[in-house]
Amino acid sequence: MSHHRACLPGAGCASGGGRGRVAGRTRVLWLAVGLAMLLVALSRAPLADVHWDAPIYLYQAKRFAETAYLVDVARNAQEIVAQLAGAWPEDESYSEAFWRSSRLGHIALLGAPVAAFGSTDAAITAAHWMFVLAMPLGLLAWCRVSHLAGRALEPGAVGAGGLASSALLFVLSDVHGYLSGNLVSEVLSFGLGAAAVWALLASTATAAGWLAAVSGGLAFLGYTVRVESVWIWLAFMLAYLPFAGAAEARARTLRRFVLAGGTALLGYATYAFVFHPLADPRSYLAFAASLAQRAREGVHAGNLVFVAGGMLWLGAVFALPRFRGSRVVRFGVLWLLLAGLPSWALIASDSAVQTRMLIGLVPPLILLSAAGWTFVLGARQRCAALGLAMVLVLMSRPPIYGWFVEQPGLWRIQRLGAAMFVPRYERVDYVPREMAAISAQVFGGEGRPGILIAAPSVKQEYLNLVRFYGPAYPADAHMALAGDPTNPGRCELRRDRAHEPVRFCTGFGDAAALRTSLVGHRVLHLRRVGDPPLAGAAPLLQTTGFVLEQLGPLPVPDPSPEGSPP
Image 1 (spheres, helix red, strand yellow):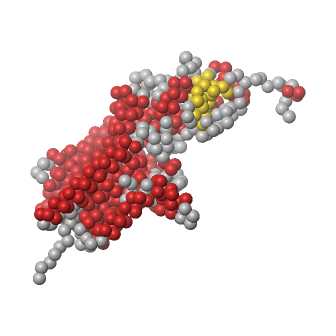
Image 2 (cartoon, one colour; image 1 turned 90 degrees about the vertical axis):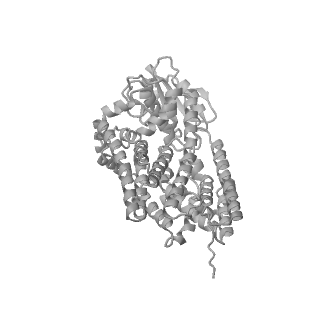
Image 3 (cartoon, helix red, strand yellow; image 1 turned 120 degrees about the horizontal axis):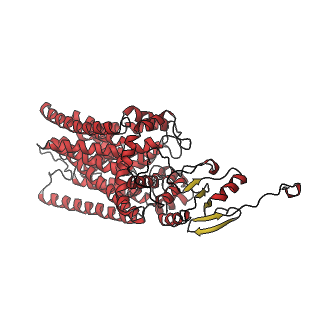
């Protein structure tokens, strides 16, 4: 009696004609992946539909490019850590100086185009394309990691067709388009983590032990970009080791892991020596605790878990029935649980969580999704699975989803949308061209110090862009402890800062304080087009979305009873 085994794409068990058809379909899928990546890249515009941290990072990149930023951070490391006890500046809600120190690699990489092109539109465009390319390259690298892990643990369990299907569904997910071109640290750390794990797996499969050292170096670089990103690398090693094979193979894998870990530790020790005590884990935990006390706002983190994974969750669900019989699936589930530990802790504490913070869930989901689609594409249920995927793809298109929401009786479908789309409040258009024009007016006071009052409708990140386009800092400026000049506060309580020709604030407490400031300062007001103008203000510039006004002298009130207001 003969036994026929369903052939999985990429497993190499089909006949010659079958293999040719499978290979042809797989090539078409990868072409579709490339086309989808291209369309997503071309659909993105600089600083459009991005997280509010993007302009903040750009402003910090300006500081890095124009001053001895790293030297100053190292020199003031003790003072920065001292802020964690609650001694941060009064216009901050946490130690922003320590937050910047935990993203030094990211600020440095973003500072490269600013150093090359200055604080200009060209620098923003260059940074935009750097981050547009980083996301799909990181995805392809994680696909390669899944392929290598599948080949090592269970040959045939992760086929090329399954990988291509997973990659295509993730590219078509809302989160991929959102992160592409988004100038946040998660984008670069996503690719660096993939490169680190790729080199690690390659070192275990060959005699090239030096690749393990490369892996450790890349993991350390990811640590400097985003401290938390090193966890996905560590979680992979912890999950992979129990599945590494017999005693001899496991010992060889462990030696490679030790070499990689030693290299990363050497990089960390050097970094910790230079920036002591910023790199002390206790300092970072104290900083994280100060952030965890902030209450959750917006969409629940449970929904954002599904948003971050996008349509990879569909393939992961297809893989779960094979949990008991597949080493790859068991490894993927363990890796997902370990990789998500920081996320599970945030969700359990009901802390403020944003979609980008959950990017660490994506790598194990790519593996699980690829394993699930490899199995389904070789099974009889593939037509039903493909139909379900098509429905999800169509529903994830905003025009189609919007049409369904507007239909009578279908409003509950918005609950599904909360698990498919990045929340609207995380997506902001920062109109850099408008901010550049406004900045030219704000800093064009011909040497006269200025005050810029921002209306409540103008968020702080717009002011970060105004300052980004503004005058350069002197090369010898000390910026490590200098707070963000755009932090909100009353105008009369602000003091002139070194190297800051304009004082940013949110308004005056009374007319007398404003009158006093008008004597020696050029006072401007920035508002949205729909906001009411300030009394006595003359418009200087109007863009599509904003109005910049200048305040003139106020009339002196009549102290006589007849002059008193009714």
